[in-house]
Picture (cartoon, rainbow, N blue to C red):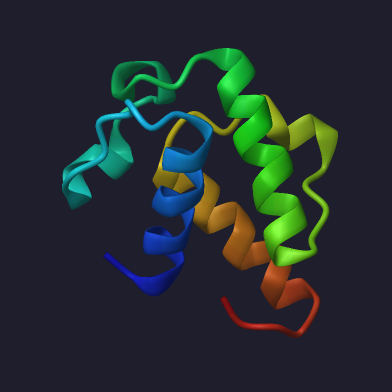
Length: 85
């Protein structure tokens, strides 16, 4: 896992300590499949935006279904701000 992915996993486990994210393959599983429900996914997005000091467009929040999709979105937003993950 990349450092960004590791950070996102840590944040996800803060949202739900019971989430099953143990290996890189889990990053492509849908949130519900790793034990993160829709309310927790929203909390995850909020914590990620606060942690990285970024804004995720509302239209894109509902399209993010996996940790890897979230990582790509965070990377894109950081790049647009001239920052690295």
